Image (spheres, rainbow, N blue to C red):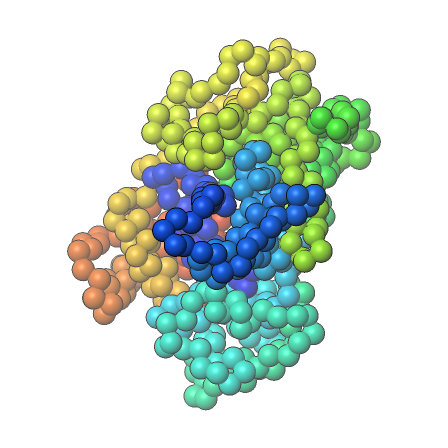
Length: 544
């Protein structure tokens, strides 16, 4: 699902979606420590200090000692050690990894489900920190900080007009739970800045992007990751939708890169009858371990559709594979990433950690969906781009599967291993949803910045006219007034080459979604964007 939001929260940068390209995966290629040596120094050369390796010691330690003592320039031993460890792990497989102590908290926060900070989603617009939304229940929201507020100083230090970066904002606003920070706010209608003394707290990171009734009787739940809190979040969303009459469900796992195996098993259990196999894991020194569904589960026989794409990986594929192999759900979308390896984490004494692949996981029919990685990291991650180049994202006939790894579900459906989950119903990447001009307006920041400023100027009137997100979704329409205001904004900001009419494909929808997000957050944003989402429309068709 496209996410045109550029908002940020204290824990992470928002990902950008390019509707013309597949999801790109970041490639981190570790540089191995390589060195040359001379047996002799000719022509009068001499060594200031001899180095004699300890032949009974550790080989890697000896090399690091030698480099530290003899290298032509000063070296950082810790950095060398980290690169050496990372090189070793990446030579094994793409998903064994090393996490330096300095990055450990940031890497784990999304999976732990929380971080420490003041609790705001923000955006940097015109070199000023704008509060998009205070996180409900967080310290800022409790003190009365509102959407549209501008953060101009933190602890008395100016934060506006200094070309501030997201990283600098994170560093200023985040901090240990219980610590104090003074934030100076400029608010529309208030002449002088307002100082808020905020006690930082633990801020939740939610796994469920949105849950709502997409049609009468049909619920929609989008899960962005499988964290420690995901199952509890799902149960709450499920119960809320059930009260609204949900009898059928669309579970959206597109772009979900995975997370905890335990959470994937818990979620799968909600849809499968007692005793059915969910997944099993097996490794060289780890015996086969089978995970089966239990008696619990609130949606074991109701119609179910699961949406996946090339960004669905790991735990997402466990859920999709379990439901597909048990003939329990219809899988719609595009072939998933293809990660079938299980990592175990070992914390090291300096605060860093090693994540080592210890097993493979297998779907109920016995297939491992891990795609090949024997041609190196670059080829492994570029495989996503290759799918785009070879037309797989547009044509089901272009899907590459290993026909030798063929399996059958209990219902007789043929499924394949060795390269992700192939959906039951293919839906191509939509390149026509947004016109090139709309994409240009978005990617140069103009559309998002205008939407924020427009909402800020008309917030009181808009909230008076539209009391709820549903009111806004049903009644608000982009009019000539908004189009004219945007044209004037483009002139003011000296953005040329845009001959806007307002009739461009996707223009009204994305602008309405962005304004809705600034008013009602995700409760308006996603339902507006999803109205023309081809995968969701196909899911509704199947469920009906």
